[in-house]
Length: 284
Ligand code: AMP
Image 1: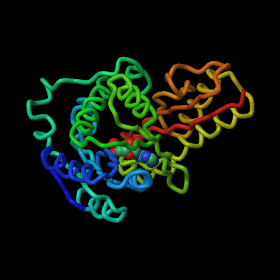
Image 2 (image 1 turned 135 degrees about the vertical axis):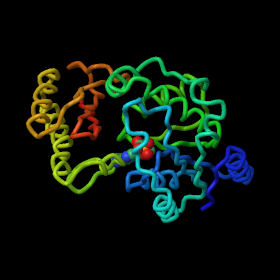
Image 3 (image 1 turned 90 degrees about the vertical axis):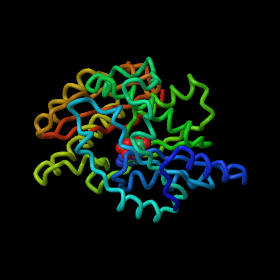
């Protein structure tokens, strides 16, 4: 695995592979890698000849009071894991390489829908930072395909829309959520949980599954389901941010007529913010 730090280096390496007829896959991450990230790399390898992983803890997508400073940076362990899944190139740009003119005057890429609801409502500016950095990374790496986790459902929807709106010639593919044995979705932020909080965190997926089963069994009173689930989360010791039954494509509130739906949820547990979701395809 070659570790590269500059746009010139990654362009050169990927350009050489492309001229040799290789299909290039790309997995953008913020590091502190776990099995979920590694599954994205394995999935990229299934359809691509060469896989690039980036690690960049993007300050532009963190709010002022969020965890950018404290976000775990574990480059050495990450590199070993990436070698273990046959990553070809690890791209780790510095902040200056990413934002040579500074963040304040950086040209931004803004998705105008789906960004002010759900996570976007609690994290103003977050998706503006995400779309901007992902657009930049796409232009730096110039891959044929990029793999994103369904774990960050809203992010995936926003990036798909950005790629469509800007005619970005990169295939966006989705990878399923990797979970711990007890159901908790793997996340770098799980490391913030205390030993006492860790078992409580499993309640998030439990409530999502409960709601999924209720809907699959025929319930369509989504507002009532959302309210019940929030009560469950509070009783379990979490502070629900949102728990929303939505349409898969638009992220708008689902109605009883929709068949392609998902339930997206976010909670605070102590100082940690956790997100998770389930996808439901109802048969009309
Ligand atoms: P992050 O490093 O958290 O920015 O995530 C990088 C990529 O990994 C994103 O596409 C995430 O959706 C994906 N990802 C993170 N956690 C998981 C998980 N538990 N299962 C699948 N994909 C994940």
